[in-house]
Structures are given as C-alpha cells and as structure tokens.
Image 1 (cartoon, rainbow over the protein chains, first blue to last red):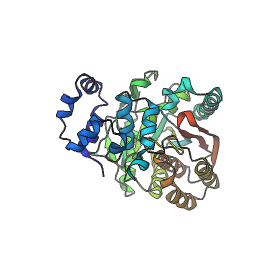
Image 2: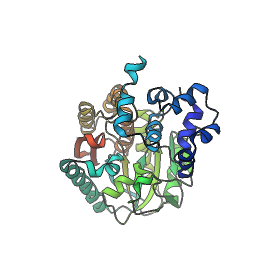
Image 3: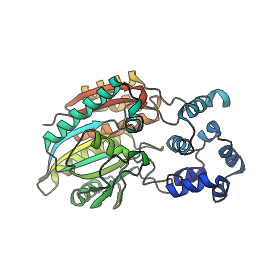
Amino acid sequence: MRDYWLSKLFFDLQNPGVANEYRTDRGKLLDRYPLKPEVRAAVEADDVAALSRLVNPYLLRFYFLMAGMPEDDFLRRIRSRDASHG
Amino acid sequence: MAELVGVYAASHGPMIVRNWDKLTSAEKGSLDSAFVELGRRITAAKPDVLIVISPDHWVNFFMDNLPSICVGVGEVHDGPPEPWFKAFPHRKLAGHPALAEHIVRTALERDFEPSVSYKLALDHGFCIPLWKAKVNPLPALVPVVFNDIEPPFPSVKRCYAWGAMLAEAVASYPGKLRVGVLATGGLSHSIGEPDMGRIDEVFDRDCIRCFENGDAPALIDFLNQRLPTAGNGASEVRNWVAAHGAARGRGFELIDYAPIPNVYVGCGFASWKLG
C-alpha cells in the first residue's frame, strides 16, 4: 500500500526549488505535508527499509539520491529490508 | 498512406549516463557499439516520425492521475528534466500532432482508451536511446507512455495488441510518411528494491529466445509467468512487446545483449525485419 503524502513529498522534491527548501530546513518543508507521525519519524531517521514499504521504489531511490545518501549506503540499507523486518 | 519503415528496441538505464565514467572499457564498448548499430539502422530507414514507447519515470504523472497508456499529441515536447542529463542537446523536441491524433482515433475505434497529453516532458527513457544512438537530425516524435513503473500495469497481452493497433494506425494514416517505432527499457533490472543491482540473465536470454521464436501467445505466457521475478524494471519489456506487436510478431533480430553490472541492467538492443 502506498502512502500518498510520502509519495507526494518525494515526487515534489524533483522540483529543484523544493529540493532547496528541503536542504535549507527539512523540518519546515515536512510541516507542509500531513505525514503520519511514524512516517515522518522514518523520514527523519533516513529509515530506508521502513519507507520502502510505503512508496514506489523509483521514488524511494530518487529521494535518497537527492538527499545525498551514498549509493553503497542505500544499497546496504535496502538489502537489509527483508532480513530486518521479516 | 504512411509506411512502417522500422521497429526497434533499446535499453535506457540512467546509469548509462550517470555512471558512464565508472563503466569498464568493455562495458562502454559493448553499449557504444550496440547504440551505434541501432542508430545506423534507424538512420537507414529514414523515418519522418518515430513513435517512441517508454515509461514515464514520475516526470509527467503522479498518483493523482496515472494513465496506463498516454499518447503525446503536442506540437512540441520538452526535453528531459533530469539534472544529470544536461548533455542531451534538445530542450524542445518536435511532435507530430496529425499522426498522434490519428493514433488516438484509431485506438478508440479499436476499443482502446488511451489518455492524451498536449504537453509532455520526455525523460531519460525516451531520450537516452535517441542520444546514444546519435539519431541526428531527430525525426518528429510521437511519444507513447506505457505505465511500467507503478502497479497495476497494462497486461502483456494488451501491450501486444496496442502494438498491432499502432501498425494499423500507421497503415491507415492518410498522408505520405515514413514511420518508425522505438520501444525503450528493459531487460531485467531492479530499482529501489532489496534486489537492486540484480540482473536476471537467464530471464533475459529466455525472453530474447521468445521474441526470436515469434510465437506471440508463447511470449505472452512466458512474460506472465516470469516478469514478476525478473526485477521491477523488467516490467518495461511490455514496451518491447508492443514493438513486437507492431511488427506482427515477426522478424525479431537481436543487435546485442549484455548484462552490465555498472548500469544495473540486462541491456538489450533489437530491431525487427518487416515485410
């Protein structure tokens, strides 16, 4: 099941202006999206495994690239998903 | 009457651009020679218009409204918006509204219900093959977006029928035009999933064999069984199936296949002999 607002956040971040807002003040930008508390917490914790269950995988991959997570780190975290969450 | 002068398919993985400097020389050589041969075949066919079938990677459409299939009928399309693809030389690409609208009308007459867009941005899926194959000058483009990205997807069977309908639309177009079809994407790959980076070479080679055999029902059965385990990106083989349908299921010729780990994709290139 997709989380609409999380998906919308990731989709909107493809806009360079929105991405700049994110880099300047992530909290302020997140306030504009009615994310469920546990979803917002997963965003703030860069919890790739948790977020991967809620959003299209292409948007997930885009988001962490945009956020500056190194590819190796992303791959390690996404590959740990099934092991860590059963 | 318009004439279908060529049908082609090519992979479009973004790492072909983003990761180019990190590819081995063998990987670069393999991709370069395949794209050059693809470009040679397209150029030799002298198309006035290319119908390009590709997914939209979250550029034009979102979950508010996500068409299964959309035809771009605009006079002009925007170039790729991806910040890492500035090397693509075209910010605007000419469309062909008359052929595009004829395709939409033909589709509706044949009980398909495509979405229509007058304003599309053509992302790397459309533009990497055109750029790497050095198709220059570019023919006018009629983009056809297949949703291969976010389930539920159009059925493989329906994609084959779409391709056959495209060929019908070209044949019935009341104007003198040379038209090509280019399907992009695939073969196996996985993006943003736990198996990201896995290439299913067995799937890819079996899939290629099915295209070569030309038995459309067998190809459709194969894909219905095997696509779900070949990585989420393999869904783009639907576009190849549409190309196969446009070629009436005959004449598939592999230009090259190479699993390229640094691109994350089983890279395939093909054309169909028509007639």
